[in-house]
Structures are given as C-alpha cells and as structure tokens.
Image (tube, rainbow, N blue to C red):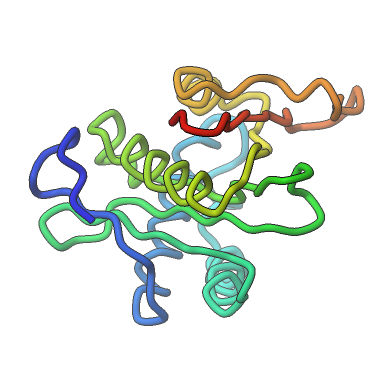
Length: 176
C-alpha cells in the first residue's frame, strides 16, 4: 500500500519472515537512539540484546494474533509496527506492541504512515479502542502519539516506579 502523504516512494506492507533480520536491526537502532544517554551504549548493542530482539520479532511474525507491518522507502525497510489482540488489549480493541522508525528517517512521515495503516486495519476489523505502552522518558514518542489522538489511559495508572505510560486511542465508528 502506497502512502501518498509521505511521498510516492513510501509503502507499507505485511512483513515477511525474510524481513526478520532487517527489522530486528532497525528496532535495535531505534531503541539505541531513544535510550541514548539513559543507558550505557554498551548495554544496547550486545550479541545477547540483538538476539533478544531477533527472537521477539521472530515470535511476532509467527504469532497468528499479531500483525507485523513493514514500511519501505524506495524498497528499503525504514519502519516496523506490530499489533495484537490479547491480554493487554482493551475490551473491543487491540494493542500496538511495537512501532519503530529507523532514526535516519525520523520526522519523514514513516511513523505516521505505519500508524495510519494500523488504524485503518483496526477500524476495518471493528475494533473500538487501541492501547500501547510508551517509555515515560521518550518524549518524542509521547508527542507523536498525542498528535495522533492517543490519551493517557485513566483505567491503567502506572505504579510510582513504573517506566511506562499506558495510552489509549478511541476508534469511533466511521472516523479515522
């Protein structure tokens, strides 16, 4: 699916098993960037950490309750998103479990394209709400989600020592 708002060279498609290593590496780069200054760089790029994220994406691609999307610019993967139904999803809804954009493509429309494709799929499936968890310190991501209509989830207050904020997106019928 082409995403015109982000240019004719951006497409969002279902991810495939063949994308696994590229998507895991993209996730690691994004994660290293948003944790920069919060965790030692040496902890973010270890063989064990890379293997953990590869395993996470391998499980997501194999799970029948999880949709994984890949954003490509001129044929190269530049973003990834995953959503699922299940225990963390609000009633009648889904959980956006991952949304990462390669840092070289931040603020270029890739995240918005992935988000728009997710919302369109959620509405088509009849979902009325979506939930996600975002790191408290990741102000850039929190601002992105706020611009897309996400609000703090009053039904899921974090513990005082929690590192995440729960956000909720209401999906009214007929609206995007």
